Image 1 (cartoon, one colour):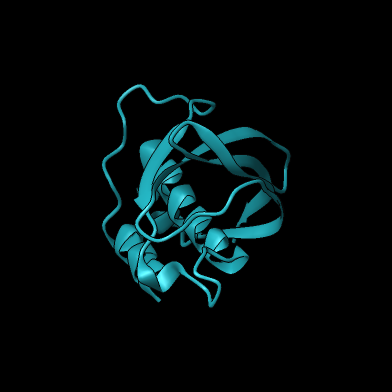
Image 2: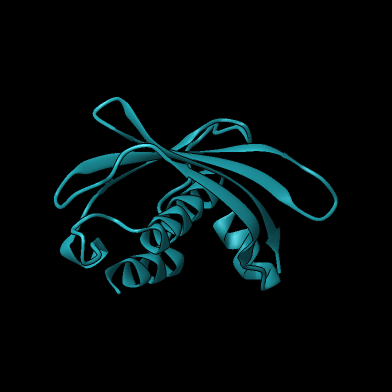
Amino acid sequence: MSRQLHLARLTARPRAAIPGQGLFDPSVTHLRVHPGDLDVFRHVNNGVYLQMMDVARTNLIADLGGSALLRERGWYPVVASSTVSYKRSLRLWQRFTITSRVLGWDPRVVYVEQEFTRAGQHVARARGRKRPT
């Protein structure tokens, strides 16, 4: 639930655009694992990773100055598909970073890569197709 509230706050009040941020420049989101992110095995499960990716994509849009445009047109980003590979677990209170990048687009979707790292180590990588709806 905490990630849903986090996403709602970022959607209502996005962070400021980064001057000069290019479409293919990485967007970096720093997060920490909270108790609500954990499953019964005391690590972040795949569903929470997807919520964290939503938070990072919202920041990517904000960094590019696109939040107002989406709101103006009544659009919101929808995940059309995604593939995630996991290498390490995230545990309670660990800090980590999600680096989001636009890889390209076609007439229907935008292709995005999101990489999770912790202390310089690769944790997970996701590639997906997003479309405005």
